[in-house]
Amino acid sequence: MIDLDRIRKDFPIYSKQPQLVYLDSAASSLKLKSVIDQVDSYYLTLGVNVHRGAYDLAYEATRLYEEARVTVAEFINAKNEEIVFTRGTTSSLNMIAGSYRDILKPGDEIITSELEHHSSLLPWMVTAKHTGAKLVYIPLNKEGRITVEAFQSVLSDKTKIVAITHVSNAMGFLTPILEITKLAHQKQAVVILDAAQSAPHIELDVQKLDVDFMAFSGHKMFGPSGVGVLFGKKELLNLIEPFEYGGEMADEVSKDIATWKDAPLKFEAGTPVISGAIGLAEAIRYIKSLGLNEMHEHTHALQKYTLEKLSQIKGVTIYNSSSENPVITFNIEGIHPHDIATMLDQDAVCVRAGHHCAQLVNKFLDVNSTLRASFHIYNNYADCDTFVESIIKAKNFFEGF
Image (cartoon, rainbow, N blue to C red; front, side, top):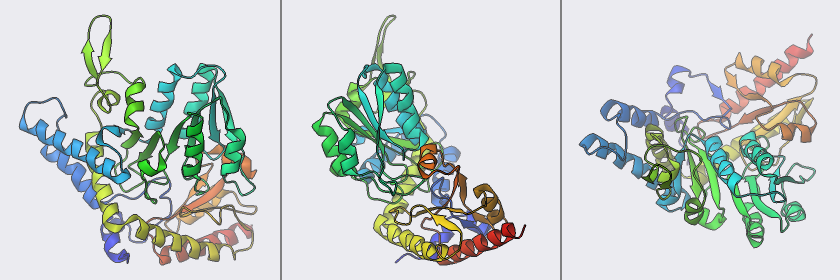
């Protein structure tokens, strides 16, 4: 069972703002005290670089950094050398798209979808422009989901890349990635998975998923901002060119040519995100101690409870009532989402309003923007009640004009 009283004590923001109703975890989660302590400890007791120094402080920093890599690898069932630390999901996905500019050619096809976060879409849009490859979109069904049948309708012998979200940040829908990956590999296509929204909520096993690359961020799973993970199959990481060049990633350098170290070091040019990686490892240990299944059951129950109450409010349109992730995306007739979000803030209720860096979703829904409430392990039923009450109060206020 989830002990919410204990869990809230693990997040120091609640001691500063006990009335906070934080429903924007899909954008960024709250931060654990133990994560903050780990980051602080690195800066207070070490603060030095990794891999390079022949002194005790450097050895200890390197040990903690490489132990973090092991922790991440175990979390997703990968090999240690398949884990690259980056600045976040955006950095990871740009890294892969940039590397494939030297591989793709005119006539090649890149399959993506209208559900993508801009971090998953735009790098491939630019890569297509540079290489002459073509972006191909999976048709969404009426609900706004990606289906295996729709994917099959666009898959062809020209498909070289499938760049796709695991869970939509705007809609919370889960992509049937197992089946899609199997079909893509029959065409020898490479599958890149944006797991920014799934990593904090769903067990990820890259051996079972069989994706070729996968990216996620620390800040959405109680970890620090500015750190993320790129998983890549070992043989593919060693095949592609790095996206950045500099210290530590080079093997041999002469006046005219240079060679690179094996992955992951060849993708971690310069000083890596040392404190971030250490903090992310602590966040993962915390998640494992609670259990992803238990966390998901809790957040799904909150989502269901809130959906039932929200659906009873006249004028509320909910776009994703069957979403697998704990996200509710909705609008209120005649009232701009930003106005609602501003009013909710007066009750210390934090939700997201806008296009959620996924403008194609809004175009699919035929709206300019939406409201999004997202739940995590520290939320409770009182948060849900306060949120719904605040929605009713804001709606009544604007309808009174």
